[in-house]
Amino acid sequence: METGTADFWPLAILASALVGLSKGGLPAIGMLAVPVLAFAVSPVAAAGLLLPVYVASDVVGLWTYRHAFDRRVLAILAPAAVFGIGLGWATAAFVPERWVTGIIGAIGAGFALTLIFGRRPAAPPAPARLGPGVFWGALTGYTSFVSHAGAPPYQVYVLPLRLEKMVYAGTTTVLFAFVNAVKLIPYWALGQLNPSNLKTAALLSLPAMLAVLAGVKLVRVLPERLFFRLVTWALLLISAKHLWDAGFG
Image (tube, rainbow, N blue to C red; front, side, top):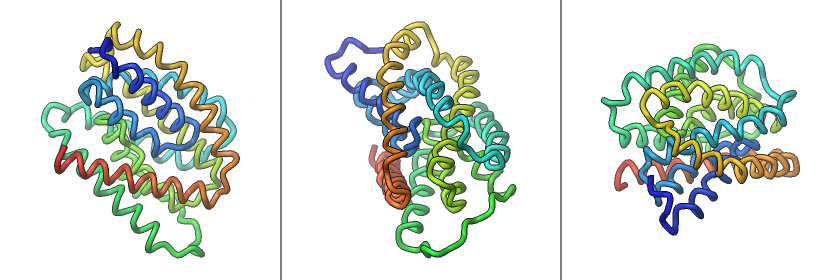
């Protein structure tokens, strides 16, 4: 990995800070981390390097949100996500990453546009149903394995539940901490975790952990309606980026 280039470390520090902010309760922001670092290294190398940074940031996020999460949502999504990770591992050599990127972008953009233009403000919260949760949980695990991009399918399932913002942030943090821990096994088996990567990731973990605390503060001070509006627009913008990458990247 070319870590000696002039642009690597500024981009790597920015990417690790984005990871930290996502673990602080702003999940859509984390999807920018791999594309940002991919300006300096290949997307595959960027994903492998950032996974240990995600895991290190998860420690701070789990402590912060240890009392704020929805157990039923986690009980539905976590096992399904494991299946999705396994599917991603089994098909890694056969499915073009461009296809997955396009699917992620289409799902996220369609859902965000529905929330922005079609959702009724007075609609009651949806129940956490098992069937849809298994589907979206598996898709979350699969897309997270391929490119750390599990946020769009996750949000398709969770946002209609209209969880309180701290519970939403905590549920997100706990689920993706679990997903990232599971992903260590296939990433190691595929050779994406090596001594050079781990040394660089250790250096990048400090700005990521500091960014977790900054993300938590932002979640706490933002009004709830504004918080979810920002999450929705971030989802739309990032999904548009995925669609662009799939078509023209």
